[in-house]
Length: 75
Image 1 (cartoon, rainbow, N blue to C red):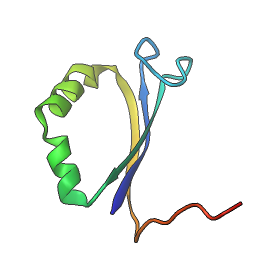
Image 2 (image 1 turned 90 degrees about the horizontal axis):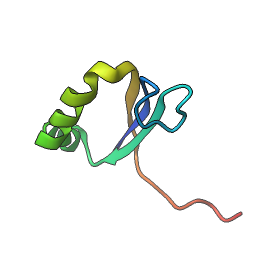
Image 3 (image 1 turned 45 degrees about the vertical axis):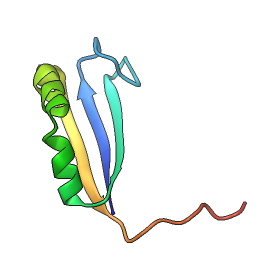
């Protein structure tokens, strides 16, 4: 399993979690790199990035490999 996590910084006029900074958080879970690659090639994803690439100021996204998942321990 992999996680994709990081931030996109966009021109503040776009929808953003922190409009003053133009910050958009990204957190996705995928089975593996192949599944992520299929997602990134989907027509709507390609169309989205082509439409908004001119509004991106920075991309800081990484892929993290994880060995599994478990429930949050009781508190």
